[in-house]
Image (cartoon, rainbow, N blue to C red; front, side, top):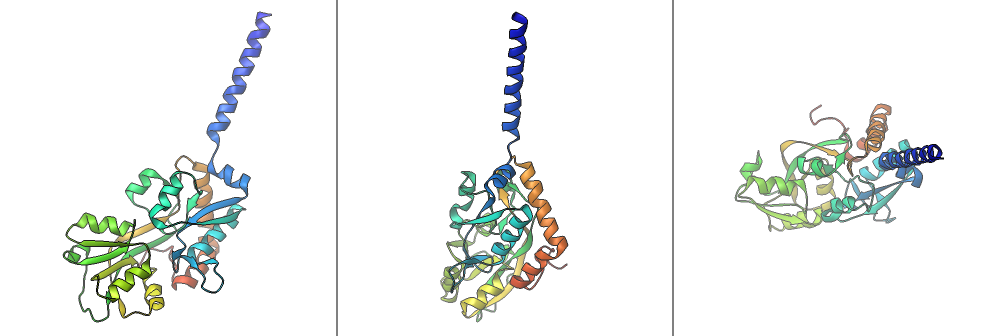
Amino acid sequence: MMRVKKIITVCLLGLLASAGTIALAQDLLDNVKARGALRVAVEGTYPPFNFKDKKTGELTGFDIEFARALADKLGVKVEFVATEWVGILAGLQVGKYDAIISEVTMTPKREAEFDFSRPYTYSTAQLILRKDDKAEYRDFGSLKGKSVGVGQGSSYAETLNAVGGINVKTYVSAPLNLQDLANGRIDAALNDRLLVPYMIQEAKLPLRVAAAIGDIQKQGIPFKKNNPRFKAAIDTAIADMIRDGSYARISQKWFGLDASRLPGQ
């Protein structure tokens, strides 16, 4: 009888261990597949990356088309969650969505908090000046003593603050930033080189594209750490899109270039 009890005990322990292993093996990919949808956060006010179409009110832009194509590669739908940039990473941390596809620059600080996909766009910072301003700034240091507008919570704000001696003014949206620049409230604005031509064209303000400055930046898709199968699936999907040309078609439509290539290539 004791022997039978021991066998039963061993079997129960084995089952518990197996259950624990299954729980530990749970990956974000499993949740996405079970749900049949990838929940993606976007800013929703960041043209041409992600914004609402003026006629239809629907989300559109490079990030939106890229996310849909990516989800299609995973065999699921995509559900967008429009979130203000200032709180977008915090929302990811508490599980409001699975990932962010909204041009999140891969900085050491962010990579310490989240895992990232392989980069899906490469860019640089680009200055915007008033048309009547003939100044030329070739690096961040040359902006000392100037007032520069950047997106609230952006990596550009971190970079300029680290330089020191620059009056960094943050904005919740690019249009407000450009309006203040045109009105002379700030000396320059700084944003993504992929975004700047579109911004200036749409704003219809007396502004000009100035120098691209700083290092090349990599943008990736952040998600919670310890989801290796999700990362592998996302990375494979991005690689497939680049290989089959679907990425290039989307990128050319919105930027007139292939943003998966390093600037200058």
